[in-house]
Image (cartoon, rainbow, N blue to C red; front, top):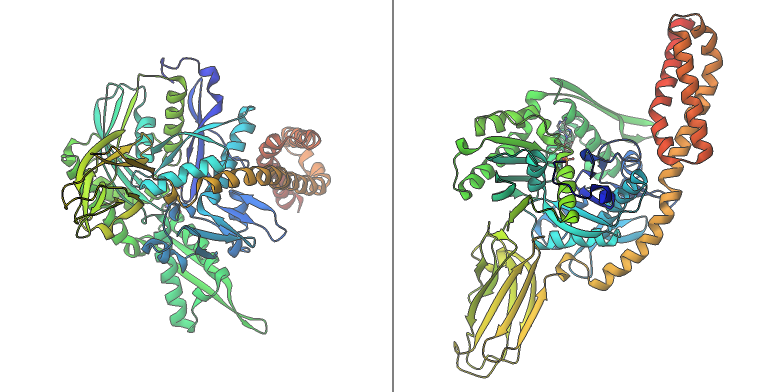
Amino acid sequence: MGPSGPDVGNMGKVIGIDLGTTNSCVAIVDHDGPRVIPSRTGQHTMPSVVAITESGKQLVGHLAKRQAITNPRNTIYGAKRLIGRRWDSRDVQKSISLVSFDMSKGPHDDVRLSMGGKEYAIPEISSLVLHEMRVVAEENLGESVGQAVITVPAYFNDNQRQATKDAGRIAGLDVLRIINEPTAAALAYGYGKGLEQKVAIYDLGGGTFDISILEIGQGVFEVLSTGGDTFLGGEDFDERIIAWLIEDFQGQHGIDLRQDKMAVQRLRDAAEKAKIELSSLNEVDINLPFIFSKGKGEALHLQKQLTRAALDGLVGDLIERTVAICEQALDDAGMKKSDIAAVILVGGMTRMPRVQRTVNDFFGIPPSKGVHPDEVVACGAAIQAHLLSTGSIDTLLLDVTPHHLGIMVAGGLFDVIIHKDTTIPTSATKVFTTVRDGQPQVRIMVLQGESSQAEENELLGEFVLDGLRAAPRGEVRVEVTFDITADGIVGVSAKDVETGREQTIMVTASSGLTEDEIREMAARNQDFLVKSDSAGGNDEVRQKVQNLLNEIDKFLPQARPIIDGTDFGVDALNKAEQTLERARHAMLQKDTKELSDCIKPLERTLSLLNNVIQKLGG
Ligand code: AMP
């Protein structure tokens, strides 16, 4: 960190979390600056996947993802795509046929997901991921973690932000601030460097696309404009490959693999794997043996080759969609492409060569190297957490509202009160009058969106201001005030100017949960989570280490005489013995972190022994 950081010794308790659609990442600022905290399995990011096994065990992250193929109905991924959305929304309806788990309508027109025979609200699912991040951080830091900064796509509306905040609360975290992912990325890129430049953050992740144009100067990170699409990301790329495979299979065999959830899950895994491999290879083979069983032991297999060029063809229009959004964002910021000094890539999908080429061609400069696309957002969140918790004033984040905010007025029109791209926190007031003679009340429908037609925008909430004086239309005046906090969360009040009578809402119910429900889930989940932590992940790690130890014990007696006679023998045996010693000690100590750390060296030892026996033994 720069010289600013007073009292960094106290920083352990506030974490920054990038809660991603596909993967999540947690980071902290310590004496050396921001650093990512590895997951239980040692990786820097963790799949945002949760599951309940057949035996009722709750799994989160890699363990959950690993068993997704065999347990598709009880494995939930991509919850971020559904968070804060209404059941009837087009996007939710579109998801129903694409996911392998069951979805249903919740009591507040929200979405519920079924897992292990139980219904979960979306913030509850996200809270399981957040809780895991918290526990991982606590284990790593050796102290409790109570506060966090969580990131969301800049394009998230109020419902989605609120629901994310609720997820944090259910996970037992005091969410200090919700910040936009691109702002976090810019912070991680530019913090402490004394930069004076305009930058674009191009973020294409698993589920969402975001573009932000920021100006960095004298410690101020000011967002000038944002744009994005909450339904455009890597999963859409995967879906194109899946559709291509399914269509081909149907053409060949007349069988629709979509009907088989397990087959779809296998296709999804294979499609994603092929897509990722095509970032470094020119062609890949997709092999899915026994994808369809014809009964009586007969089965059909799927075998296809996909080239990088063919993939580019399948997804070209998706990438082009990001270009149109970039153009709009530049326009909104009143800028030309040549004004941009650096383009920072965020999100796993930006590793795709075609994406990088498109960004390069559009902005006319190669994307910035040196920031890690998977970690930069969490690191930025950690820096913001650090700044908030130390009260540091040398850096200022100026974010903006991603959508127009306003109310519905007569004729079903949308009257904007706070315009898109206004710097937050902010507030604004507008005065309206009654439209009917003797009108006793007004209904305030709070909307967010870009359309002039009220019904085409997102409804954030509604309330009634009653007790108005009976008067001819246009005489009673109602003052409507919008407040947006630094988290981007909206509060609305309506006041009868004459009487001072006032009604206020914090637009909270729209997160999909009531206050009581959130409290109840927080209490329930804490109990459940504490139990599942010790009964779940830790057990898996112990089991894995035990299996590796058993295998090594089996091979070592065979390998020892062979290795002894080689040049590298003494060294290799010593290392293997040390690793075994370390793992056995960790087993005795029940030290989960140490056990996790032993897995890789044990695997290496095992493969060394195997190699030795195969190559030298024969
Ligand atoms: P994120 O939400 O940032 O974790 O991004 C995850 C998305 O990036 C997923 O759709 C991944 O399949 C995709 N992804 C990760 N690595 C690569 C890669 N090397 N090439 C292409 N896509 C990738």
